[in-house]
Length: 387
Image (cartoon, rainbow, N blue to C red; front, top):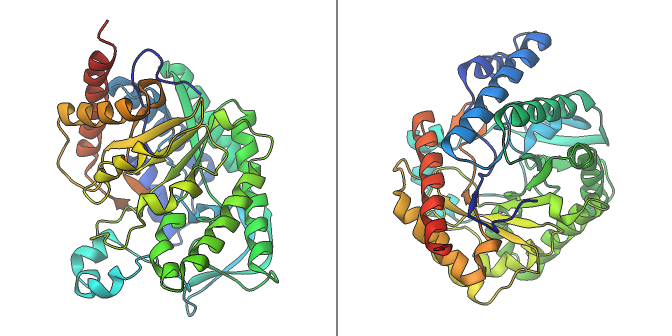
C-alpha cells in the first residue's frame, strides 16, 4: 500500500454515482425485468473505464470501480451467496437509527427522509447454509478495475467488500444454532472475495458501517452487550483476513450515510480500540461532517502502529456545499501534525451512492468535491513539504 512519503495521497470511500448506462440495468432488476447479462457486463466495463479515468483526471491517486456492480454496499452479498430468503413480514431486531428514531420520528416520517433513507420492507432470513456461489461477479469486477487502472495510469486501486458485521445487515439468522456460527459462516463466505482481490494484486477495502450503527441500540442494553456483539464480528473479520498482508487491507468505518440528524452516532473514542483491532494497514473514518469533525482530538492520545495509515474524510457526502480547498488542506494538516504526514491519506467520509438509486449529492457536486479533495491535498503537501 502506497503511503504519503513525498506528498499527501488522495482516495475516497468507494461508492460513486452510477452513470445512466449502468443505472438502467439496476432499475430493470429492481422491478423484476429480465436483464441481458452480456450487455450488462459490457456496459459495466465501459462505465468502470470511464469512472477510473475521471478519478485520475481530478487528482485521485488511489481509485476504485465506483462499486458500480453492486445493488448495495452491504446487502449485495445476498446475491452472491446461498442461504437467504426474503420475508416481508419479519423485521430486523437491531434499530440502526438508535434513539434518533424516537427523537426525530416526525423527520423520519417525512418526505425528505423517505427520499434519503429508503428501506426495504421485511428482512432477509438465513434458512440454509451460507455458501459463496457467484465467482463470476468478483472476477469480472477485478478484471474491469485492473484494466481501467492500467489504462488510466492510476497509482493504485482498491475494491471494497462488506465486513461480516455489515454483511446482510437486514438479515435474521434462523438456521445456525448460535450467533457465533452465523457470523463466522458469513465471514468464511466473504473470505472468497477478500482472497480474490488480494491475490489479484489490488488493495482490499473492508466496509463496516454497521459496527458503528448498531452502537446506540445495543448500548441501551448495556455496554457489555455491544462490546460482545462487536468483538465477535471483529474476530470473525480477522479470521477471514488470515494470510492476507495487513498492508494490503483498508478498513472503512462510517456512521451510516443517510441524510439524518445522527445524534445517535457512536463516539469515536468509544470504538476506536475496536477499529484498530482489525488487521489492516489503513483505517478510513468519517472526519469532515459536523457530527464528527471534532474527533481529530481522539488521535492526540490514540496512536497508530508503525507503518499504518489513517484515511480521514476531509470532504463529506453529508452536505451539498463543496468544501473550499483551503479548508480541506487545513483538515489534512491538522491530522498530519498529530500522527505524522506520512501516515495520512486524504479521503472522503463515505460513499456518494451507497446503493442503486440512492444518490447523496448530484454527480456534478460529487466530482467538484473530489476535485476539492485533490486541490486541498496539493495545498497541504506544499505546507507539509516546504522544501
